Length: 328
Image (cartoon, rainbow, N blue to C red; front, side):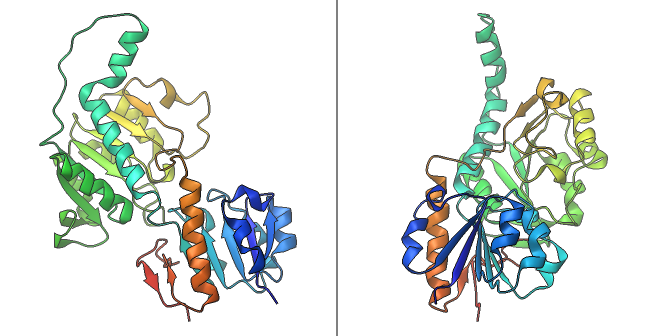
């Protein structure tokens, strides 16, 4: 019998590129709602979580009886992590690598936008106002990348390539790092913040990192520094960030993620002059869904052949600690 592949977050297989290619290898079911998920989980051996923001698996969990592998179509897996899944022997993989370069490019774009005053230039253009200003040079500025996984490393490499000095903050300290030179431990974060001109937050959201940036962290930043968040909104105490921006205790922020998404129209972030609001799109580019589907299909072929899976997530840590791990 064909193994059952359940695709969460879609109504039809055509919504996932190339998925129809697996029609002769699997019985494919689609579940766009919690109710569908509950009804279709029994017997399913593999689940493709196509909507990485949805927390529906937790609600439908009692219906799981045969699941062996979940592939999550996102780099962050916080929406899918809960105690019962973590404690299970189900293998869990993610889309590590698909979004690294585009997210690094987005960070570079925000840094250049701040340094060259692009928001002010566009505002002046809208008013037909010729206002000459001096800009900043990016080369030589210091960036602190908080989170040294594959995306953080892509950010570090790109910023180094344009002449910035880059440091990383990770779970543990180490010297001689290929991308950062030196990585500082998480308990050294506040001590490194005053030296940074740009702080880039891209750590996974776990119980240890929730609310990582609050009053103390923004107080420790250089008043001329800009804060960039491409991780998760819940990594930040948003009221503390707003206060730091509104009171001029940091120079600006570029935010691609928020606690509540879509960001409500009444949110003060929209009208804060020194804040760039982005609708959780830093990693999304034309054809990114094809890249995610290619990655899943490669892993599917590994699964049916009994080979090791790529991007196996350490469920207790909440991220893919290694590219490959043995699944048998």
